Length: 138
Image 1 (tube, rainbow, N blue to C red):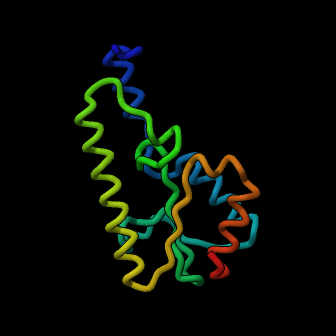
Image 2 (spheres, rainbow, N blue to C red):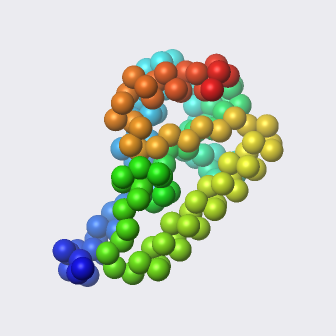
């Protein structure tokens, strides 16, 4: 199957994808702020530079895009139409890196929560999950 975009259009699309301050991340930050939690962003001294760090709770939150981090949902199971081997390796390496970062943080005494892009659509469930996590009942 051929790509529906020209090479130039595909390049622009891929270049526009951000690693920080994504819409899902901004929604979680807004929710945390609304709930009264204060946090830090992208702490470079922690493994994986978590998207959100709540030092008071010794907790780190990663907000992952389903495709890029290979979530087991319809969005995460999408297979690239072009350069399949390249994208499969890139996504596999991301999963390995995520696992390593999570283990390093836990070994250092941090609680770690991963919120998937597809989960954010149900804001009430996400809110309850975050509250349970921060109160130590996850």
